Length: 447
Image (cartoon, rainbow, N blue to C red; front, top):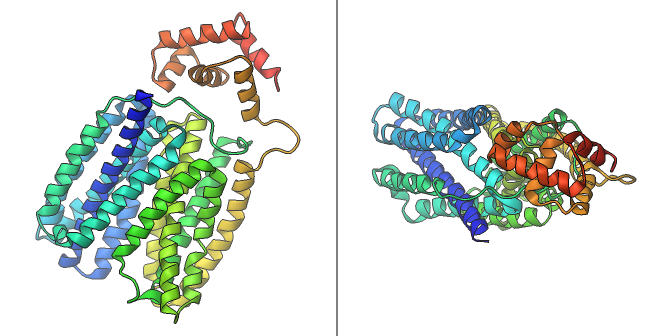
């Protein structure tokens, strides 16, 4: 129990401190750019290019993690120290070129840091990953909101550098907390997807990308309906509440969390329809940011579940990676079509229709149980229960069934090869088998 609580604390702390550090630094750089150049150039650099580079950073972390999984903390340490170092020239420099170059480096390192804390979430978050992510991200968003409302001037001077330096130290400290990885569990869904991993990833990526585009474009054309009716800073507070609520709902039921994420796409259209009714439009604007929290949790947990369930842990951050690609593309579309609200509405509507079709297909695969026969997850669970297998023995069995050697299994779940041999002997003893081949035969006979 103590190990579990420590793991939960570490995961939440790493997410909270990592996101608060990077979001605070990004806002400070954005404000500095607005002092040094025009609003259009600042927008292109901090938003369009910034989001794209964050996606690249997440991809870099995924590649490094795949090549050498045990180097994850070292990567995080280097990227956090690099991020803090780049903050000084990005914010203090009076040169636009210097600020732009170091600010773009900040965005790249921000992606690497995000890749790390999403890996920690998938590796150590256990069955409450959605709630831990929602709490960590939500608390960091509230912290960012408090800084902008109570001490907004901090973003324009050396004060933000002190705050970010402290956050960096705390982040590194959280990363060094020793906590055991959580025991593996199946995704909280009604059925395990019966689809090749490549096709499943393509479908999930398409849904996340379209959701991101619709959200970005939708909030752009609906913003004019509430201008002067609601302070933009307060949108972060509603978003934070939505994140926390979405985390608990998604932990309770993955399918409910997914449906709420889809419903969030409708809100901007409602806000637009209420133009002229300032109070009603402002209420739905706030509801839109609350609902946006469900999408933010959904895109992360969707890929976290797949990464955990399919033993492809390096894909933990791909939900955010694809989301950032959509954020960058959506921001660029908003800039190109800023003079035509009708074009934005039509574009968002077409993308919304496409996202609904893809979402329905994904929902059927992920969350609708097979009608006539047991799926692979049910067979595996029944087999494990019948032979009284522990959580770690289930991990070993799952990889053993994929024809992994003891060495490969030990590298996959980060324990010694002798420990794997011990678990394999227990598996053979419990199932009454004399060899791995016989164990596979006994398992397949359960189909």
